[in-house]
Length: 324
Image 1 (cartoon, rainbow, N blue to C red):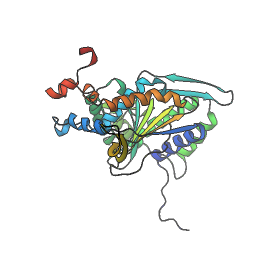
Image 2: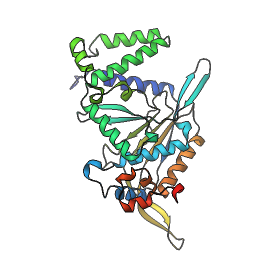
Image 3: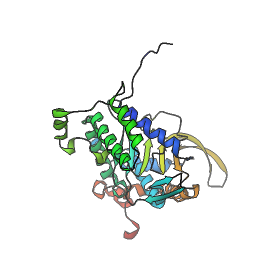
Image 4: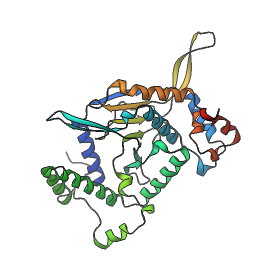
């Protein structure tokens, strides 16, 4: 049967294929679908933007990312990397204080790239929004093939330092020969590109491995009616979160008299995937409890913003426990 089209892997498709294959060959995935009622949380989020102009509005994706960061602070073991040697059954888990988010991003040209949002656990909403805007700008003005080639070369050298000579040799052959040969800059073109200020292009820090992955398919297609059931855990990370679009869902609730009634509520499906070598389900419970607390007390959103960005009414809600 004659194919309609034939497209050989470029470096972006090669990297995705390699990483996801490694994930499914080596990581025992566990998946849990968390579906909180975020009706009040979403309404509070919309109030946050009332006094902001278009340039300074905070996206719902950013607010959800902040909530997940707060959840990770309650369950820090989920913000870890694992090293495991199956042959000798030895391993270790390294937990990080800094939350660096690997965020898959669809760029205007349709290409997908995973960006590293560094130290998001310590940033407020305005700082997060400014960081995302800046890194997307750099991505849109970068030579993506060259940026990914630099990351791939770094990973290859790291693999070589670990003594995996045969694996490196195969990667070198695949990158330099045949129809899937990797195209990258050479000579003057490479020097000219590297002369561009780092504030104008992606760097290794923007593309290196984060400590946890948050993938938001809801922001890619808000009208979708489905939800994540499972997603890749990128080694050596031990957890990944897949955020769907808001869903209008019938929910059973008690009214003032104690009678049960069905109401339509806004539900946010969040898939929690974790590496069973590193975590058990109980390790995720503090994360879920913190998220439940946030959604039950949505005024906390105002404490996440830059105080100077709030109007007088919002500032009333932003008073911390220490100030009351």
